[in-house]
Amino acid sequence: MKSLVFLISVFVASIAADDVLVFTDSDFSTKASEHDLALIEFYAPWCGHCKKLAPEYEKAASTLKSNDPPVALAKVDCTVEKDVCSKYGVSGYPTLKIFRNGEFSEDYNGPREAGGIVKLMKSKAGPTSTLLETLEQAEKIAKSSEYAAIGFFKSLDSELGKTFQKVADAISGDLKFAHTENADIMKKFGFKDKIVLFRPKKFQSKFEDHQLEYKDDSKLHTLKNWVQENILGLCSHRTPDNADKLKKPLFVAYYDVDYVKNEKGTNYWRNRVMKVGKKLRDAGKNLYFGVSNSGEFAHEMSECGLNSQGDKPKVCAWDSRDRKFAMSEEFSMETFEKFINDVLEGKLEPYLKSEPIPDNTDVPVKTVVAKNFEEIVNDENKDVLIEFYAPWCGHCKSLAPKYEELAEALKDEKEITIAKMDATANDVSKPYDVTGFPTLYFVPKDKKDNPVKYNGGREVGDFIKYLAKEATNELSGYKRNGKKKKTEL
Picture 1 (tube, rainbow, N blue to C red):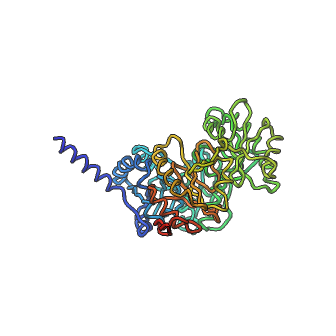
Picture 2 (picture 1 turned 90 degrees about the horizontal axis):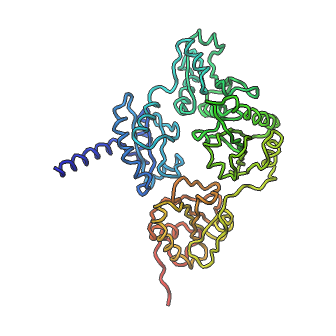
């Protein structure tokens, strides 16, 4: 009986796994374009988070396969299919992205369990732009609590109408899209063959227009960029969902932001941020602003050396190089403006989270902290392999003895450094992108601004073979193929 139950469970699991499609470099474009809507996972077989996601992803695939309309779930092995993973900027595992008709639509940042995946992807199935057939429908969406882009077209088949639909397909997760061909609606609103962005009442202020009319060409990237730029406005309500969409230089005010229970109090401080922001933008300065709830972003505030004590906003800034700056003075429009100008003019020292500089004498693996990163990793006399790890990470603990063995094997190589850095205790600067642990980068001595993410095997031999091949100068103890050189007697 137990054998029968086991066989049934294996059979059911194999069916579920078959419902997850497999895409490769050679067939990605073709297969992805066969589906109106697809969720695609970019993964690595050794990734612990990917293994945890796998059964949930398979269950969701089986459910969504029979949805009306159906939603496809697929996966791409990035250790093999490197071209497509590079094309879509995959830098950590698992990375999930939503595609429509073979075109990238948006990053998936939703739940990682089957029920949540199914619910979210069902909400994205069907039309991305709502057809408005009555004046009541149009007025309701124009006055909703969310940003809305409405297309007023004599025909949706016009060039601008088709572009509008493609943009809706691509970024419908960011705001509401709707369109109409109704003459009465167009007459009432006063727009014809126009696209208009409506700001929610709660975000309206005297510092920017309440509605914006698109006046550029019908090119897809032009309209898409215009929508994405303007839904953020002069000062966005910055949340965990949209935080990564804001450009830099960025100045964020943290306080008790709450548009549900305290809209008036929230806008009291936001309007002061906006008044300063408008003054500086009108002066020709290119910068961005946001307000965030101090409770939701407590960790980020801590990363910037701030606390949430007091009634006034606390401010953290990121410059164009992604360096952090904390405003030390109490918030006022005068101190805020001065802080902004000091950041832009390079008068302030960046805030740097760092452990103390360790003694790296006579240790095979060099310990890097934020304060000695420049000295070790950006040493132009050496290639560097660096591991970004977390002390609690099981995969990092498993890698540790192999990494030590690797460093010991290469200790006599004068032009290569094996290093590690606790990415939870030290700031990691651009261009390094650490979204999971461990993350490894190879940094050639002559390409310090262009480190290469290491996605190879995790055995000592795998590392040596990779480093022997990629080293700027041939290693003294190993041939380019990774084989040890013979020692002459």
